[in-house]
Image (tube, rainbow, N blue to C red; front, top):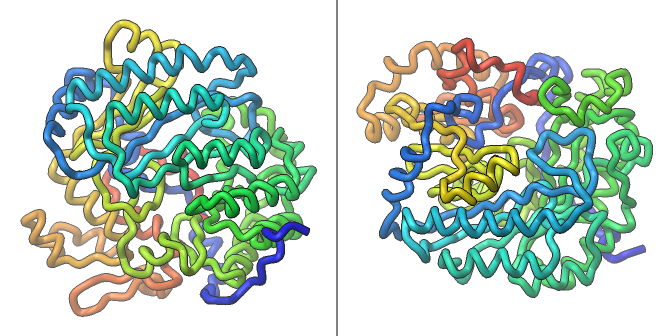
Length: 471
């Protein structure tokens, strides 16, 4: 047995008793709040000229950026997938995409200036390791010439464990990547076959073992519960296998079956999806098993070992959140490159066009590939402040909000404060003399608490059913 599978679980985190009745009551759809307002509020009235002007406001900025690159290619389709992707085995297609990325970087830096400091780099997709070593080296060279990656910058890459081996991980380490995220989803063979993603626990164990030997700073494993043919017993086996592998972090998402929006999901037989009671049982068992294995629940389906930087930031109230999820880096501007990528600069969001041909055509014509976006108004900025206080720090301090936004908190949020009463009744929220505080129990439903302050959810356009479920 590999060394990676010999870890001894140590209990450091006690999971509160959630209770089946509470889980059922909280089993509703809602946003994940990687932004506020959420991406469903973006509109196509947002123009390239508007984004051009926003980028120019960063000229001379010293606050480090986060940098995201969306690599859209996958060799095969996973039926559960809701990501923007191009499924192809024609690796020559990545060449024109790289040309387009180089043009986009040039256009962005022409507006905001070159060598902007970068504290965080993340390659996502799709499958970033679809790119060859030479193509990854070219991509990094493009970024290194245009941006100033700080010496301690985090460099993360998402990896399909079916397509890499220890030698490939060694080459990624030599390129400077220090964080890896492996898409696993489930180890049960019948589930893997049903979602068209088959890989063995032994192969993933070898990769995690290699990553540790190579000195990667952090490893993450992605899981999904609610997939076809999953049962509470089968998913518990998968969770036990993952805790034995001992990655530093785990992201465990509830599957959202939305075949009308995501074409690959139409290949899933709905009759094979687990019922709500079984989904809840999977969640309860996973929370207990990860807690017993020494993982802290960070919030929003994320777990981290008790001594991991993410867990430390959570305990200290220093979490931050952007379109890549929770991070330990201070919340700042995010510049995102590639088709469908979403950027955030100051009080503006901008999303690139999703279709790869349209993305490449815009850049060939010398245009920023903007499709839609959003400019926050004063009310949005106020509510974003409150939502992120809940999501990242687990508390609301009215005096701080009043000082920053010049409002009377109790008067401005009277309906919202009344709605918080049910969370108090369920011991998810505690009202102290000067603040509202999310309890250990409340962290498991933190997005539901944040939803109370989401003004857009009360409008017709933001239908909750389009979001994933809270539990």
